[in-house]
Image 1: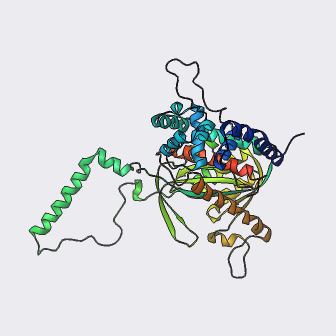
Image 2 (image 1 turned 90 degrees about the vertical axis):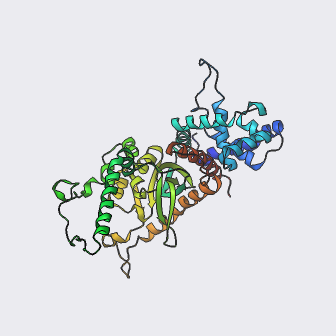
Image 3 (image 1 turned 180 degrees about the vertical axis):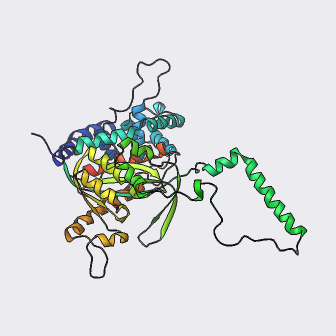
Length: 413
């Protein structure tokens, strides 16, 4: 008989409590709550399946990558801000060290080895593949009612990449020098003839623009927007087109004020039970709606669900059409610009139907997941640079969060 998700998790929790934890406590002594949570996470995620082995290769054998990957999962579970804090805990905590796979203190690698291994995990997207495998194994036979979609700010400590104007100034400094010489010449002319008024440009059109043919900037048709192009693109092409560099982002808070940050933006799809299904990391300045279609396709490939819940930032016709095309029912909070297309309240504001409003209340689960990622699983302590490494750091935390939420299905909070 095939077991459903609750029965599988119940069976797994029974094995943890009656077999795994007693064996570990008999070997290591009484385990703390964080150690038990780490043991459950490492037991449930298929980490060993995706970590490459260097046995049999020529040259000096590398350090055990499986133990290092387990240590990075422990870093997210224990909430360590830096790798150095993780190494200090591995030196003093025998339970943590043994759970990660090292029997003695001398076997723990140097901090530089951890850094090189983390770069390898980022290049091969290790936590992304492990999370996808975990979702497919635990959610494949489950019919999910709602998928809530939202994005959250991720602050990072890194410089912006050079813009095209900065590169032009660095490559061709002669143009900036010529511009300065012209400005100095005009200043000298004003000083040499103080009583002579300088001619001023008359207001009005300044003639054809020298940068564009015909003197007019061409207008971009609405059919050439990113959302329109995504309707006919493959998923790898969509993800490749999204900007991923660090920059400045802004988002309105609940009080209506705009908060700005430097870094990235994490886009999440969360299923009932606050289980993260898909995640995409982009530049902070990218609008939330630009990732809705790739996320919908990515989530559809992994699970089966009925409704998509999104706020007013996703209120676009292309998103609604793509969601219906994939076999889902989009429930999107209407944006004020769409008031003429939807039913009205007596005061003239758009509204959802009572049934849609009841389902839309489930969207708050993605807000709770965003808060837990930042507060409990390292979302606020980004100490790496670059899109790949930041995404790897976040995905280790999302892995730990996913297992914790799966266990809460049979263990109420």
